[in-house]
Amino acid sequence: MSETTRPAVEAVAAAMWAEDRASRGLGMELLEVGERRAKLAMRIGEAMVNGHGIAHGGFIFSLADSAFAFACNWTGEVTVAAHCQITYLRPAKLGQRLIAEAEETFREGRNGITDVRVRAENGETIAMFRGHSRTIGGRILPSEKDA
Image (tube, rainbow, N blue to C red; front, top):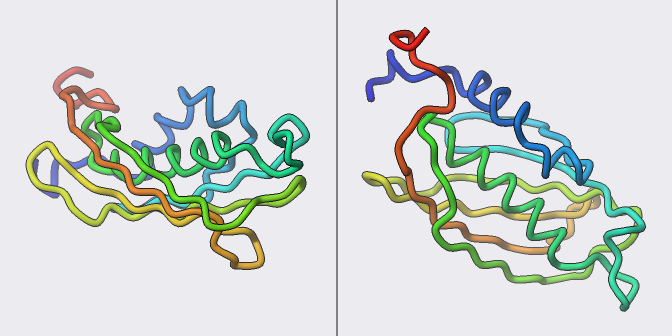
């Protein structure tokens, strides 16, 4: 796909966000999007704390995964996770606002790799996530031919 036929990254993100009930339901905020990158935030609420009194890792993973999704779908082609891994470096606490910054670092053909750093607002790194993506066909926005 040429640069001239590629839809605006912001329009792609807006269309995805409108349908993303999971991210919105967890209270995530879409802060920034751009080519190969995205930034989302989420505050750790009462229902996100585990038996140790810290954020359950699944919620941190969900934030990173959502940032990954917005970063790897920037072209407007439907792209999904093929494999993801996360390393938890510090605990997140009740009430903390976490910020996930994603950057697609590799894309060739239908495959990509996106790295996500999850930080607390004070800048401390909470977790590092790496997602492997696969473009599966289809468009996020209807093409001009379909309209």
